[in-house]
Image 1 (cartoon, rainbow over the protein chains, first blue to last red):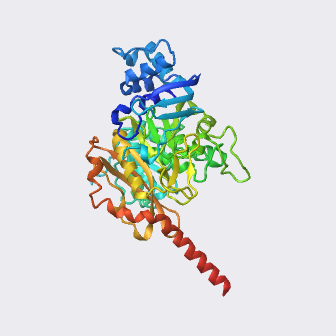
Image 2: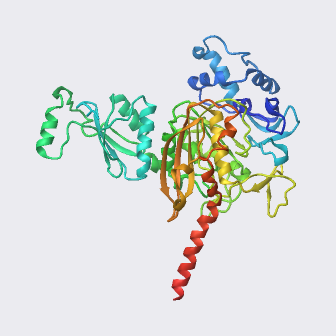
Image 3: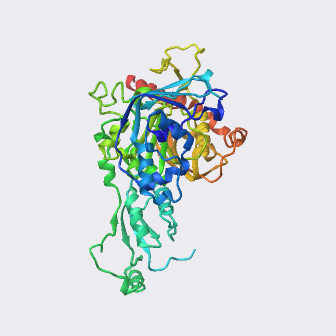
Length: 125
Length: 392
């Protein structure tokens, strides 16, 4: 699971609403997988990122050199974009859990794939 | 209607396959590249030759880089029903524009060889209902997929639709309720093969075609209970939902329900096997698309219909989504599926979730909850008839 994905995921446990984001990340196995750098794609993603959630996740994984916020003119700043590319797309959580911050419900990640299934009782209608 | 001028007219040679899908594909692509569909031709139904006005050669070339429905494109210098008509038509074409070059006979060929290179027969990882390669590219074209888009398939299965979008430069997400399919485990769909091998999963499929860099993530998730945070981040949602015939329609259920042969999801033991009423599924899908698509983004999906009862009013409706096209593909004598393309034209506000529950537009599709029964009733009738006639 990439950190871009973590940034877009939220818990849908009943009653939790917007307090289901961000999910608390815990990782037991992480892999760095190189991905071809595409500055245009990374630049497109910057406005969609919830920065506080990203920093929290990056911190949990002990990542360094993570920009604290988007900088002026980021679209043309290759150094900035390369750092964001690495954080968002190259860090892969293979094994771990995502936890709903409100209800404590755990969603496992195995082989890099999060399992977000909830039973009827647990979900909002 | 004004007749287009002599210059900038092109002759498209179309493939004689997926006839109904061709016009929406060409229109979507022209719109994607900044052109508009203009033509003096009346019917496109059966003819393989289409005459179009395209404002620039660049747009024409871009069109050909994407289309799987058109085989070739030619500059049209003249045409007529008789030699005299043709001659005078040619005389009107400015001589200085008649450039003789290597491209004399054809400016560009379409992308039909993609159908062969991406054929499901050669793909490493397939499922029982993997989409025919040509149709998956047509779907991506209907969805106006372009480079650096994010495309999402909520019923991803083995990822066939993601491959087409990735080929056009989009980054892809998929979810599926089936744990084994997403992980690439369990029984194989290929004849003579028992279990899936280690290179059989969605990521491996993309890797097979050199498209792994476009793989974002896949998740095990129930499309009726999505896990995305509030926001608009998908440029297109392109999907083939299960119809309940070859793959079951499912959603997660309650621990309290008495399961008879109910499966539990490995890992979390969430019960998975309630049948998902088809009309609920499309309600959820349209709502989901309206909420998470960017403005101008497209939803492309297959809608199964019981042909004797089908009317256009049955196509699900949503106040935020505009219907762009609706193309039929026959499945059997009394069933077909329709490729529906919609575009988000209005931002989503919460109340939209409920407004169309009350709309009559929506209720006609309720009948299709029994699509599965109707499909099989046709089959059992035919079998009974065959048995009877063989006994006579």
